[in-house]
Image 1 (cartoon, helix red, strand yellow):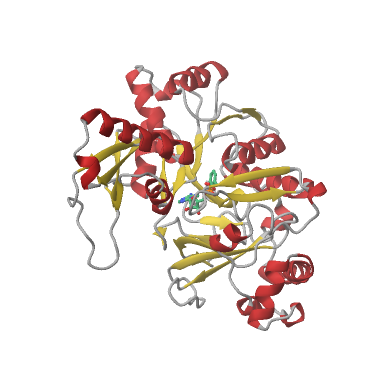
Image 2 (cartoon, helix red, strand yellow):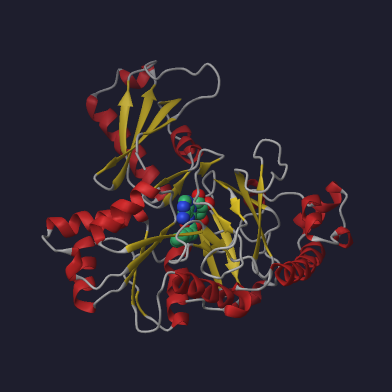
Length: 433
Ligand code: DLL
């Protein structure tokens, strides 16, 4: 079902006219009220009046995570703080998170876009939406929650964790739509098997999965194990949260980008040039309706391509292919965005630890596990075992405090971690996804 026929099926020409109108208003506002944008535009020699058509977007400088970090926490907000009604955050590249804000109208648009997402997956009033995305600073839980309510479905705000209880609630409350990360969906399927529960005895019909990379193979596995349809949904905090793009149940190939709210571009991550139609590159978004935290040409670091051909569902928005990788080193471990630099940050603050480490990520069953191998100094190495054990535990605790996920720390002898002869290869990702 198409939630908002009027906008989701706008003829291309009308859609582009709307985008241009909204883009012009955005750039005028950013230039007038956010010093960072004004400065960057001045440096690039562009004025708001230079934006005469959609192609002119390319004249504008990119926004990066580094820009967000420099303006931490609220420096890029474009409204007075009294108008902000919600704050979310996600991992930054160092110790500080990336902070985003919403006005009442932003929350309203977000609910609309998540209602569209759910509706594209065939959800409707009367459905029981089992929302196992995490509630909290993460945008997944609350973002999806408001959308399910807007749709008129009954939402269970279960959040993540305690899988056995999740399954009991699915059985007892008759959950029909599952929202969680794809790896957690597989985890639920495994626990169901352990509990000897036949998934076809449940009412689950469809799952909307995102927040981490997954593949067609994983889709097949989830569909088979849980006996549901599995769809891909995409978003990021900096642009809004979930509800930036989503697959429809009719097409099931590529995610419709909600282009009346976001303008997508694909660039070559090395040169910053916009690539030709259909080519693979880094996704860049400009938010054209957001009030509190609009972004201009935000570099997502996610690799994808745009699919302009129309879809059988009737929506006119371009689709994006499922994310095929990243143009930086960000990892997503159990749904949490992790930058190796954050781990380095922790290690470097601890005495007795050398700046040589390896991060090994693997999947045990459907759970991500992370091991950090850390080289210790000669001096530390001669210490008692008890001292070393304490050091290992301390690193584990500090990583957990910063990232919110546990890992195993293995201290290794001095000079055993291979030295790099170029770019350091600090991460080994053994997960097959
Ligand atoms: O993960 C928002 C979200 C919540 C999306 C729930 C979908 C469902 P962040 O924590 O800011 O926001 O992480 C954003 O996650 O840049 C991608 O690298 C990755 N990501 C999100 N969705 C997908 C997906 C939320 N469907 C980062 N496929 C993004 C692959 C995804 N990667």
